[in-house]
Length: 305
Ligand code: PSU
Ligand code: MN
Image (cartoon, rainbow, N blue to C red; front, side):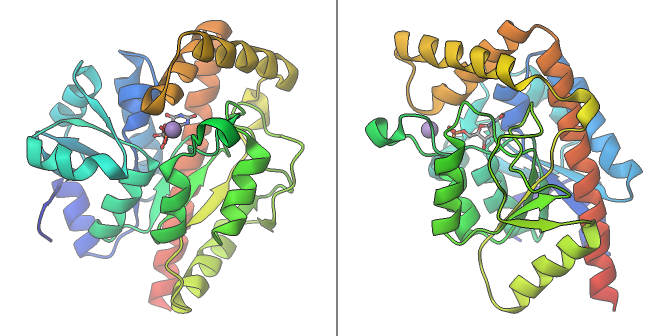
């Protein structure tokens, strides 16, 4: 496979058909604070290993697309000041110009699909921003879910986004949104949003079977599995709404635009909640990593039948 550089661990897992779970890296470069990002990145990988799968953190280093990072690579990515946030539109320039950066959900899906990895766990996806009817700010993650066949596990999306519009766009684009043991679309820090999720499944085997059936039909769309944050780590919905409203106000006041919007809002929220939101963030990604590993293991069992 030209253009991709695999870690040894991921390369042998794929060659032997063992379960692999992709992880994104914008969460490390732009979503979480340094130096915690490094330990969190490693904890998430460890979670996948202990659940019987191999983690493949995906990033771009010195203009090469990496599928699985060695420890020195991970350290570099997590400490680099010049790491760029890379979405679909950025990949060609990043690779040809020798950049290093974190891949968003969209860019990670592209590279995972090319690497032959079907399952990808993350925290939250990008979506339709509030006020998008005026500024057209809609994340490329949504289009990617419509066009790239990768199964993405997230804790829904933060209510920095317009969640009803995000669900409408996913419906229009034909992306299955599956509530994992829930009827509600989770709102990242909070397990509930008051919005119904269109489909619901109860275990990794059912999710793997639904994914396989769609693929067998020739569907080229992705799938979004929405896994609510474990209840004991969820934050209060009213408090988060207030904090998010303040963050949105600040973003507008400072004229924050384009790809800076999401990292800016995430940093504002982190400051406003103190340590609480970071713990919740780590725990929900950990839970998604575990579920992703379970789905990857179930997919492997389906192949063997
Ligand atoms: N939402 C979060 N945390 C994140 C992101 C989104 O709660 O770290 C990151 C993901 O990498 C996602 C990207 O793919 O932000 C979306 O950015 P944009 O809205 O600019 O497409
Ligand atoms: Mn945007």
